[in-house]
Image (cartoon, rainbow, N blue to C red):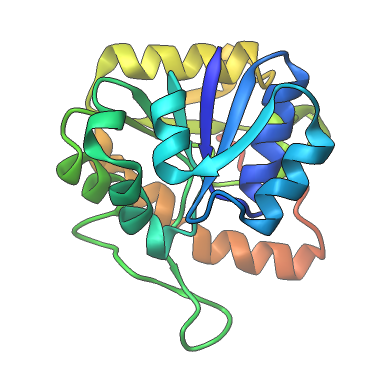
Amino acid sequence: MKIAVLGTGMVGETIATKLVELGHQVTMGSRSPENEAAVKWRESAGSGAFAGTFSDAAAFGEVVFNCTNGANSLQALRLAGADALRGKLLLDVANPLDFSRGAPPSLTVCNTDSLGEQIQREFPAARVVKTLNTMNCEVMVKPALVPGDHVVFVCGNDASAKQEAIKILGEWFGWKPGNIVDLGDITASRGTEMALPIWLRLWNTLGHGRFNFQIVKA
């Protein structure tokens, strides 16, 4: 499959590398076609790896992963173009973290709105599913790094898009069906994004990112 990964940071690189290893063709998108990080990744990831602008990547991909810095995601997606995103599954992995006052960060949007909702509103023809944003990128693509059962959340307005996302999580990344929790429509992004402040505190306390949330039911 042809896949767009928007963003050249650790999350984008980890997801893009995993997808190439699985045999997919992946274009990593950034502001510049010669972005240093994207070119370096392309040269190291293998024959299925390509680099281009946000627009190039979005036009190329049948599925789009938004792995950009959440504070700049809307701008990046505008550069990708609404027409290129139309009708496509857009997996939003980003978090709206605001580091303008240092660490720990706050959120650029919360409580009554979320980045996931903002993306869906601005790109109504895209099929937005928020997922994978509550864990370290290594765990995203290899949940077995954390022992036992732990969960990944999905939410979105399009039921068929969520089913496609669930299939991707299972078949590509190895998430067990029983550990994929559907939280409902895209407004549930508020909750998953607001989990980041405690997640970041946990990383600081534990000293590493190989942990995740588990839901224990009575």
